Length: 209
Image (cartoon, rainbow, N blue to C red; front, top):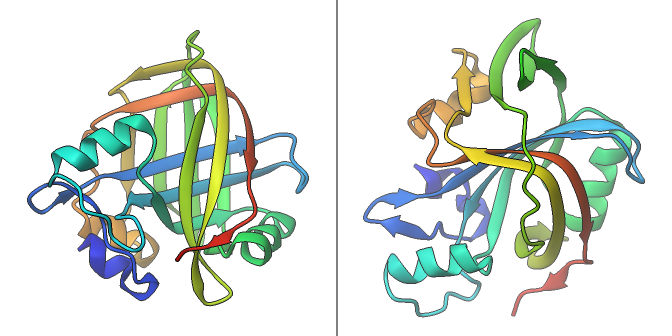
């Protein structure tokens, strides 16, 4: 199912076990960027390097993910503001769309909701207290830029972070989130987290050879 969702990109998901792959769901409340304040939801798969490199099946993928070396490909990336849309498409080739996304904090949890046609179609919530400061992440991110595969490097600095498995995803029957249901969601996450503060930078895309 996962490969079917990204087939046009030419990338292949990196399996962590027979028929199993990891998808990340990131809900971000941006307050200060060059594109202004906006909301974003990102769904990405870890994919094989391009061109594919020889790894120890499954174990090699796990090791690469844990080291932050495994590339990811974002296939669903709605945002709430046009400048963020245009920047993502024109500078990196990200598949951004404009959607109605709302951010709130309720009873010690951060809640992100996605709406379409007057209906709430996705709700993700997670506990929002944390004090950890993890090591910065410098990860390769694949995209199709100007019709060809490219890689950029996303550097992220987190603080006021927490980790666990208390993330909760709810989906409606709307067609917009049908791909997520085809993946077998919602289900309990392998891991969830809340990052109270984020500083990040993204390098210019480079062609993949």
